[in-house]
Picture 1 (cartoon, helix red, strand yellow):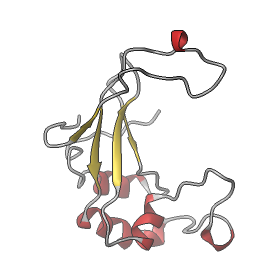
Picture 2 (picture 1 turned 90 degrees about the vertical axis):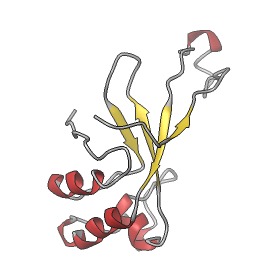
Picture 3 (picture 1 turned 180 degrees about the vertical axis):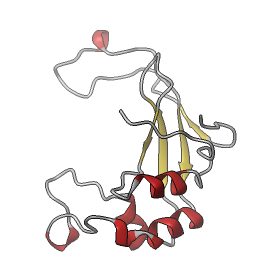
Length: 133
């Protein structure tokens, strides 16, 4: 369960366009779902930083630059490198008939109990239940 109150709404496109040539405008879902924006905070960062020793690997690839062209740093890396900033988290519905929300922007490799603690410090996720899919 997550709270939408106080979060920034991000609506879908009024006229959704396909991202690739294998789709046409006619075969993409026209009903767009609302997403919400929230952010990390100092308490969230503290929990992550206090538990970095539990992380299996801090960096990704040589020099921590990642592997491949689509590398996206983990939240641990973002908090370590840019701890003075809050970081965007997009709460994205998983489907039209699904109550599951994907919190885009908080990928981590920390243990489940640490994830449970830091996620619940984020505005809108205070009472969230993490599900395993």
